[in-house]
Length: 509
Image (cartoon, rainbow, N blue to C red; front, side, top):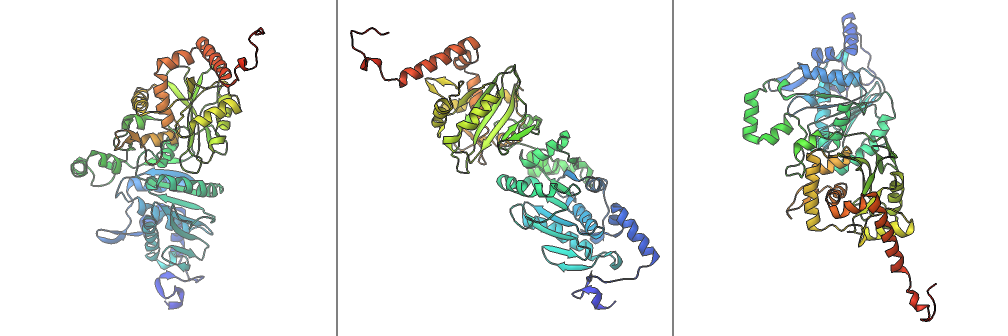
C-alpha cells in the first residue's frame, strides 16, 4: 500500500478519510464485529501477555464485564489486583470508538499515569487491527486521539481539568476507590452531572476497595438497587491460577488485611477504627429522600408527628475547612435512628443558628444539643435570643462542652451502640468518616480527613447514657419544668434588680 493511506507515514495508523475497497468477506466481518463486541475482541483484539502480543482470550468474568458495560448506561464493578480489568475496559473502548460516530470518551483515574496505561492499551489494540477494521486517524497523541468518524478519547486524573467543559458520551473511572476524598467530591460534583445530562451516555466505574469512602457509597447504593447503577463483583477465585495455595501464599507474605482488600475485594474500615470492621460493613447506605439547603441538608426520613427527635450540633469555623454539622436522631424507641444530616463548611458561626432552628422546627421542635467548643457558645446564644428557639439543652448554661473524659466515654458508648445494633446509621458521609475514625497518637480517636459528622454522635452517645440529662430532658413532665426554670433563670439574670427602682416603703405590687 502507498504511504499516503497512512497517518503521518505510520503503517499502523490509517489516514484521515482514506477510502478502501472491501471484499464481501471483510464487509461481513465488519458487520459481525459491529454487532457483537465480544466477537470483535476474541477475533481481532491483541494484548500484551507474558508470552508476547496475543489475541485476547476473554475469561468468563471478563465477558460478564463486557456485557455489563455494553447493556447498561450506568455500571460499577469490583475487581481485585491483576485480574485484567484495565485490558477489558480498553478493549471495550476500542470497539466503542471504532463502531460509533461523534462519541467522546474520557478515561479518568486517581492518577493520570493510571489513566494513560488504559489509553496506551486502546492505542495498541487499534494499531494491531487489520487495516480494513480501522477508522481513519485525525489526531494521535500521547494523551488524546481523534478518529475521522468524529470519535475522540482523552485522559485525565480526577484533579485535572482535561475533561471539564467537554461533552462526554462514555466516562470510564478506574481505581475510583483510590481517589482522595476531597478530590473525589469536587470531581463528582463537577463531572457526573454533565455526563448524566445525556440519557444515552455511559458511566463506567471500577476499582478495588479502599476503605468506606465515596466508592463504597457508590457500590452499596448500586448493590441495593437505589442508584440505577448495575453492579458486578469479580470473585478472587474466578481468576485463573488463584486457588487456596495462592491465597495462603498472599496471606503469608502480605497479611490477611491485604488479602481481604486487594484480592477478595472486601470493604474495610481503617485499621484501628473505633467501630469494628464487621459492623461498618453491615451498615446499609441509604440514598437521601431529598437534599435541601443547597444540598447541605440530607433527609433520610421525613418527620412523623408521634416521634421524638434529638439534634446534636458541632460548630465549624465557616471558612471552607471544618464543617458545621447537625445529626438528627429519632430516639422514640430503640434502636435509635439517624434521620437527617446537615453539613456545611461555609456557614458563618453568627448565622449557623438559622438552619439549626429550621431543622429543629421541622423535626417536631426537636431538642437541640450544641457542643460549646469552637464557637458553639455563640451559636447557643443566637439560637436562644435571636430566633427564640424554645427547646435547647440547658445545664447551668446552654449546650455541652466536650472534654477528654466526655469524649473518651462518648467514644466507648458510641462503639457499644453501633456494634450492638442500637444506633442505625445510613448516611454515606457519616459512615465514611466513621470508617476512618481511628486511634491517634494522643490515645484518642480522630479522622485526619475530617470527623465533623462523627463528633455529634460521640456527644449523643455520652448524653443519651447520662441519666442526669435524660431523666430531666426526655421525660415530658420534668421537661416542662426544666424549660420553665431555664426561662425564668434567663429572665432574672438579664433583668436589672427591681430594688434599684423601688423605695423601701412601697408595696411590691
